[in-house]
Length: 319
Image (cartoon, rainbow, N blue to C red; front, top):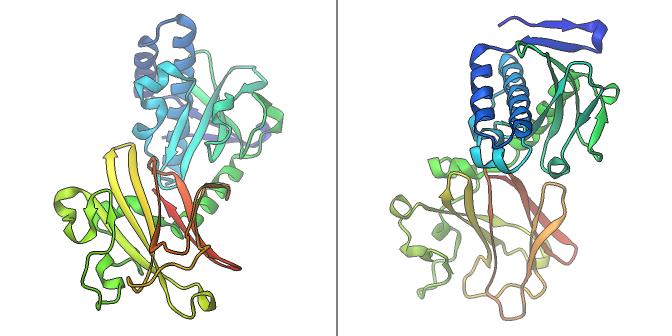
């Protein structure tokens, strides 16, 4: 594939629109109920196709088929132009027609994207120009003159990938790939207790056959230091893939000795990618565990905080 970097045009990059891209864009457009919607889908699809070509050319892995813009229901119901960057998140790829100077960015994409790339599509639908990038937006229209150079996008993707590598990759657990420290649950507890301990949605942990049930469980010892007199607690994560786009997650925190109760006031919190708490549970005086359940989509990030008084530990995850 050939491309041209035009330094006199604010470092914009010209790329040809290959025939397969035009065919797919016309196919997606032909599924729409009105001419206006068809044109929007046509240009959205071409913008995503070109952004995908650009990132692939740079060796940045993407999963275009897993993007909402490649989902017929999402295309019909919303103005979607996203591209999934593997292991990082979704990049919004907004199209412009030739000579337009303002780019429209739907408000529903503002909090769910790792960045926004603007792509100008020429009238012949045979050539595109990547105009620039912005990491965040807070208005439905952004002037082209305010876009950052594309090299800033590459830097951002690099930084996000480095951050993602420090996260526990839960999707890999279904392939039996586990990060260091995450162990079979039974090995993390004292062995002097004979009666059953706890249950998840799938039943008693000792009864679950991961190979047959599709449920994955692992645990990790968490050290909160002097607040627990040197004793660890255990964070347990249970996963169940409800569909290709939805993973059910159950979190529990237990004392490492199953005969003990958790200290009153211990908090288990789930934080979103911005660090805001969206779920929380707190142990009472007679609780031997606390639990939270939620669902997420592949590529989504979240963190788990376990806190007692001034001590806390945070574990970062990507689904």
